[in-house]
Image (cartoon, rainbow, N blue to C red):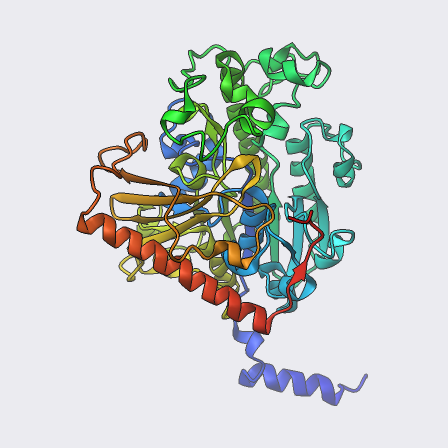
Length: 523
């Protein structure tokens, strides 16, 4: 008969007395963060869209909690994603397409993936990392336990895109189904006894995807012809004829004068929008094709989410997995005679957002919360579900508390900003408060430094004021009508105060954190 070791008996003693804390604790929550690219709010069936087919996402919305007034902290790709990782405004972390800095390792160590990994989570990342200006960009796979990501923009047929080498082992050539395969591979790789956090960054329905669905014809003509003329897509259940038999109404503003809304002296559409990147939204034929392809790609995401749900159930992971869904920002698709993002219109700065948690109280499932939410809240929410205290640098608020206690005191106003200055885009600051949104615009600077963001004493180059209750489409600028009123004075003062406060936070951040300049053209 073998002797029982003293160590084994000691462990049994600790288990019996409860001295090992983890022995009595429930399993830590698994977290999946699904992030779309360029998907604007209200683009799912469960969010009221009249014809898009998204049954799997609809189910998650209807069994979860939707946050219908969610704004992205930065309405353009790179800074938005950096803000989601770090839980800070671009004004504080300093990373954006047109800033003068790049993300460094010290900053990354305070990101939610790094924090979860240090606390025992198995972490994975799939898709577009989207923070191009980063000191570890050559080896991002070392920052996760499982990596199937890429830098830069992908293409619809991903094998034609050199940045998507990570997908080459997979069967599917179309990038969204390939990412579905990546999700399956991640779930197959899970180690026993560890919670996981999977960040999935879809490349769709971004313009790089919609414009590359028919890559064998000249790029300038790609959106002028139906994508299902491409032999590779004929008969495809999603990317073939879906939505093509509908009488889709494109915005009435398409191909009309955009300068009725923002003067040419503030933003010249022919400095990169109308003549280059978003030219397809400045012509009725290509704009309609954009709408068809855009919603096809959202349905494509929905199909992969459906498979994800089934796999989680098959593996016994469903009941302990929280799913969070959002987008990096929205998109203009002909509205106001414009295309693109990086503006503070709701269509560009509001995002779809919901949380599905099988453990959430029965009474809140299927509800919609209309309180003001920032994408920065999602970072703290992820950490809250993981039971990890957030760093003091993070400025959002956990939505988990709002789900558990809907009457939790919450913000009644939200500061908005956009510091992207490419394509002649101005600096933009604003506030959403009650039914009102106020925006002030300043001539932008490429590549900006801290001093460029100090607007103290500067008269805005252009202002906008919208009553969202009476004018949800934000077409009637009331700034002249409300000049001299207490309302406008209050909103102006609040935006100025938020702006100055963030500048002060950036100055303090630089004293205690390493910041890394990137090589940019001299001004």
